[in-house]
Image (tube, rainbow, N blue to C red; front, side, top):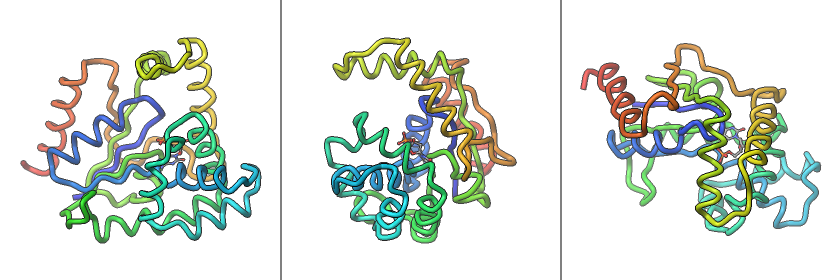
Length: 220
Ligand code: DC
């Protein structure tokens, strides 16, 4: 069973992917991690983020264990890491270099402890369009940008980050613009994907609805 979950930042992909992976005992590949790993490695090695050749070289040599090691770094999910990931993810050569590693995961999916899984849930921006267009079921998770910014702002304030709604909204709009208009693999609804708006109901109802769609699709 291969399920892809794509959509813009803050739409709820992470929550849904984690739920789907747990409920259906699937391995989980958060594909944003590959760009975060390359971006952070650029920062740590003192490279200028505009150095496409350096980013491509790092991407070509990135291994799964190295990515997991980098994911423990304090800046992996900080603003520094997010910005670096966003910049390197716009380079077509970087995306091409990271394609095989992401696709290979479905051939031999494993849980975090290394044990084998029967399938995978991919979470990202291009998993149903580029990484795994042959997936059994594809979701495109959406929500209005104002709702996504409100959620993100609440998370940041809870984490003690000094910010406000207007700032987060503007950042989110800029991020949407980059994700949807980049030259290579722009964020778009995959062909055949189920579009799901998470702003219409609460999380519990959304997860129940997602499970119902999966159960129907696979006759569970
Ligand atoms: O989902 P995230 O915030 O961890 O993603 C980090 C960055 O990587 C973000 O700028 C979008 C980009 N990304 C991408 O271009 N393609 C993917 N499949 C996943 C993430």
